[in-house]
Length: 144
Ligand code: AMP
Image (tube, rainbow, N blue to C red; front, side, top):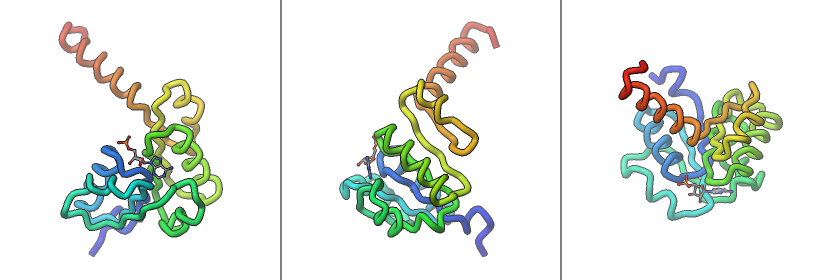
């Protein structure tokens, strides 16, 4: 019997290092997951035990999103290596497809604030790294 989290359908866009590791983790937790990438070699990063779905395609193509089952997704995670693509797909997911949870990776920290509205959750690798390094420096120097 699946729990509520496992019943949800997660669509990951971009099967790079981050997308593939998220997909592997969700699959290990028995969650329904689909990962889309335009480069078929990207799926090599998935674990041999990955039990989710994969789709080769250009994610900005509405036909590809439809084939990926975006209409029934409870979560969309946009983690291609292009900020514009991730932002576009996140806005589309939220505004057109009304996906309850949309998470978007944005490399450019100046754009993180601009798009980190309530509707889209953005994460910035640069900001996360900066915060962690600051924390390490403070711990090392006895500030915290
Ligand atoms: P990484 O830089 O390791 O996070 O990988 C990002 C992944 O996103 C790569 O596997 C790219 O092929 C994929 N990607 C980039 N743009 C698109 C797009 N428009 N549609 C589908 N996949 C994409």
